[in-house]
Length: 431
Image 1: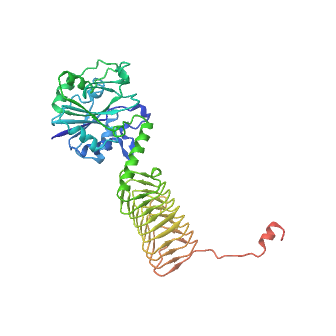
Image 2: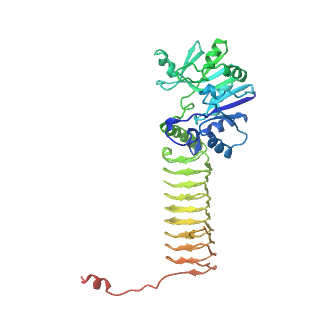
């Protein structure tokens, strides 16, 4: 069946108390709207996003990532509300699925339940002990009679526990006929999409309520909702990785963005943060380490290490308080307290405590290249650009400013000087 999808994203989101459009606030590293687009694309390529508030900014962000998305600007001044949002759109597909851009927890399975009915209209319904803030769904003999917006409810209707989750699958012909007939005779003076249900009842249409889980249809209207939704989304991400064989210590303390990949038998300890397009393969990431847009393969990282973007680490041990940025490390040991930026380090090399690659001269970044089997002593500074060839020793405390040839010892130190009994001369007594 041909299915068109409309995503409603025109609202101001004032309860977010933010200059950022509500649908661009992130869940697991991805704007909420993108989660809706992703689930929509799993069903159809015919996707229209309805915008108004900060429309150009949202559109710009979307087209950076997705191709083939259509946009419609809602005439909020004349036709406010969810019904007004669809005004002016000609829906050509046989069925239209209507989603919301602030529902980042929707799943394809939940939407398939709506689409796989023979009803004229299928609508999502959830049961809540406390239905405050939601439109109520009046159901009689398993048939939907109408939806009442909370502000329009009578005291009796406010007690209804079945609430509208805001997702619909409607035959497009019905939508095309019904949208122009909507009016704004209500407390909010808005054009409600929900009024189509009452029209459908009056016209004898088959309207089905499809019950779903509250968390799946959770909307985000505030920073509290945002945090709650991210907790749920994080739990889904981590359960999926653990199901494929990843070991996680205290998974509730781990943060993994949705773009991260984990392959093979990985161990992720408590407090770890994995960001961006990070890929971890058969590796052990230890407590409180942060990895962003990096590839880690057959290595151990941390505890308390930071791996920054464009790093590629293979068969290496990166210890505590080591920071790596834009570097390729293969078969390297850097046990603790080092900064390795814009570097390339090869097999068998050992980086001592306190070593830094001085990669920035105040104007530009430069590269440090270290060959195989190089031992860099503690508290050494490597002033880029510099190349250290294979089988080299760098003495502890050295500042290296020139290239070092294979097999050499490089050392820069002031000769040690000892003045006998100076302590006693300085303090004036000898015990």
